[in-house]
Length: 363
Ligand SMILES: C[S@@+](CC[C@H](N)C(=O)[O-])C[C@H]1O[C@@H](n2cnc3c(N)ncnc32)[C@H](O)[C@@H]1O
Picture 1: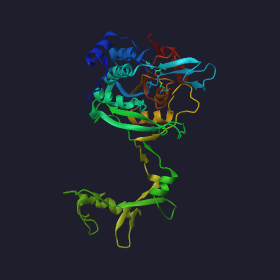
Picture 2: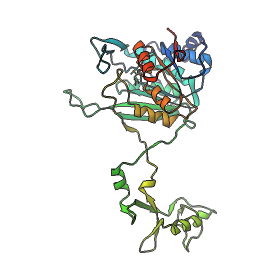
Picture 3: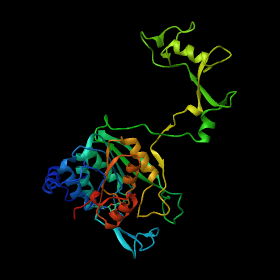
């Protein structure tokens, strides 16, 4: 599946153009913030030894809104899309130029991603579906992981001939769908979840529910298919634990026996490991941002925790105020940030307290 639009370059041409940009001596002691256009910066990284070394990329690029984003002087909490103020960045390319701008950079990002790497592209639904096809082209449809719906605001009541818009989307791909780092980060159960999922309460006041002592699938020769207390597991099922462990559970009072002599295993709410995170996220952006379109830092911390490890390098090449870089730093990851806007570079320097040698200017 390919998207057709005017002036689409062959991939080899993009990679050849990138090679022409050449290398640079970069301080190996990350973090590193590169001030400049990200096609050049990504090329420099590729040509300077970072090929296949990045475990996680999160980007929140311009959304082709046809707007200019500004920051009002002296009032960092007042951010307007138009009118006066210092221009943070302009988002005004024609649609085909925008798609090619994104595709060229995505090709370079793919080259930088490690074999266990992941990329998250935060975008809205006006351009997101075109980018989905481009991502399939660049990363391979088999490496698609999720199209995440991010609920970004409260319901809106704008007078328009359409439904209110309270979501945007995050496209999540792996470099290699079978190898991507995924740490199975969970979210804790709410009190409501606990009441709903664990309806029984024991003598100590602990909430619990029960599950059968057997699970689907037959064991051919193993212990979990053998006789326990004169019973065999029902047809098509096996014991959840070997008989000796079921005995131990019973001794510890962790089996509940029905009047008819059917045992079930007790599971306690306070021992629950948390809920798997699904593909609808509720993370509202800050009410008083330091930069236009600044993203929710809890969301970035979750992404960094989920798809990178402590020795990983995390990259955001549309860094803005550096929310991704902040999350990476908090979680003790190494990071590389790139942004062409002097306003963004200053915001990142202030937010993360960078030392002069951690900033490389390429334009
Ligand atoms: C939507 S903002 C990112 C906001 C960021 N996620 C945050 O939480 O603050 C997009 C950023 O991309 C930067 N940008 C746009 N085109 C770029 C380019 N060609 N090279 C580098 N940065 C670029 C803009 O300057 C802007 O800071």
